[in-house]
Each structure stands twice: as structure tokens, then as C-alpha cells.
Amino acid sequence: MSNKPIEPLKQAETVTSDVRRAHPIQRLLLIDVMRDKESRPVFYWVGGVLLIGTMAYHWLEGWSYLDALYFCVISLATIGYGDLTPTTPEAKLFTIIYVINGIGILLALFDRIRTVRNMPLQQISTKENSET
Image 1: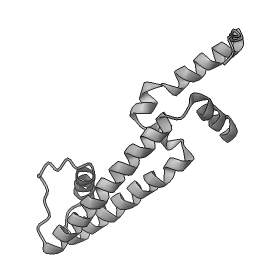
Image 2 (image 1 turned 90 degrees about the vertical axis):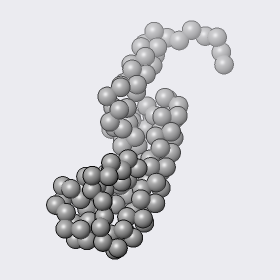
Image 3 (image 1 turned 135 degrees about the vertical axis):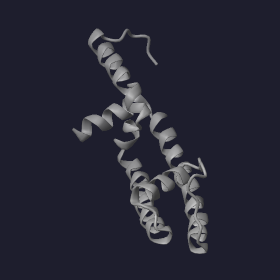
Image 4 (image 1 turned 180 degrees about the vertical axis):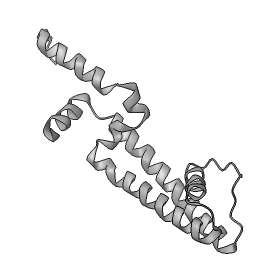
């Protein structure tokens, strides 16, 4: 590393990039992770599993689509309030498989968040510039 001073223009670009990268709303809503092309399969996996689960619980339990989606989100997030519970043996078996899959989804999502947010800022800005 050299001790040469950073040009003012370059320093301003770096600060702007840092501020844009650390935008709290984007981080809260995982927008920074969704912009990463390598993270998209995880989000497709989540959407597919939620769709399959919603349809399955609607069919197996006779719940409305909203109740089925609510149960899927609560189950995949491993919260489990207990206000809706599967009653048929088939739905209980499906829930066991579904929740195990949900744990895998959470681990994959946490790994992508860690990976994206630990990328060097220069690498991220190079990615963003190449996409536009």
C-alpha cells in the first residue's frame, strides 16, 4: 500500500459508494442481496416452496389461500404461533418435510446475506457498474 493521498474526486466517489452501499432500508429489505445474481436462486427456491406449500395446505387442510400462505411463512421462519395446525396425517407428514426444507432455506439465505455483505465494496461497485 502506498501512502499517496487519494484524489478528492476519487475520495468523494468512494464515500458516495459507501453511503449507497450502506443504505439501511435496502439492507433491511434484503434488496442488496436480491440484486446479487448469485443470490437469486435462493429467492426462487423460497418463492417456489411458498407456492407449493400454499397449494398443498389449501388442498390437504381446506384452508383459504391466505391462511395457507400465512402458515407457510410462519413455518418456514420457524416461528410456529400454533394458531393453525395440520390435522390430517398427510398434512402432518408434509409439514415435517416442509419445515426441514425451511431450515435449509434459512441457512441458504443467511449464507447469501453473509457472502454479499462481506464482499469488498470495490467488487460490489464493479458488479453494479457492469450490470448498468
